[in-house]
Image (cartoon, rainbow, N blue to C red):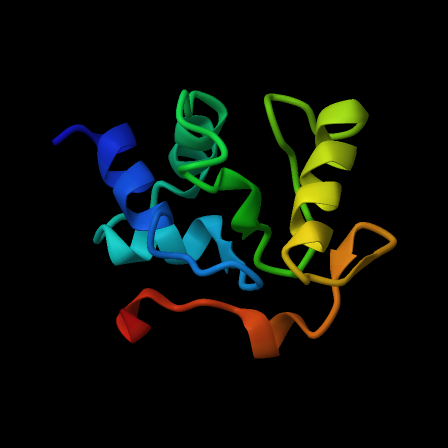
Length: 106
C-alpha cells in the first residue's frame, strides 16, 4: 500500500462529528510527514467516502481543502463539517479537544 492509500485508509476510520489533524494521521503511520498527509488529502479521488474534510490543523483551524487555503473549497469543507455536527466559528473548530479523534481509539 502506498502512502496516499495508507492515509485514505486511516481517514475512513474517523467518525462523523469528529475531526483529526494532519499530524495525528502522520503519527498513526509512524511518520512526521504532516504536509504529505495534506497532499494525499488533496489528491483524494474518493471524497466524501474518504473524509478528508475531517482533517484539520493541530490548532483547530480548519485548514485547506481541495488544494485551496481559502475560498469556495474551504467554505465547502466547513459546510460538510457542520452537516456532521461539528461547530466551526471564524475558521476554527469549536470544542476541538473534545471531538479530536486519536487513532489509538480505533
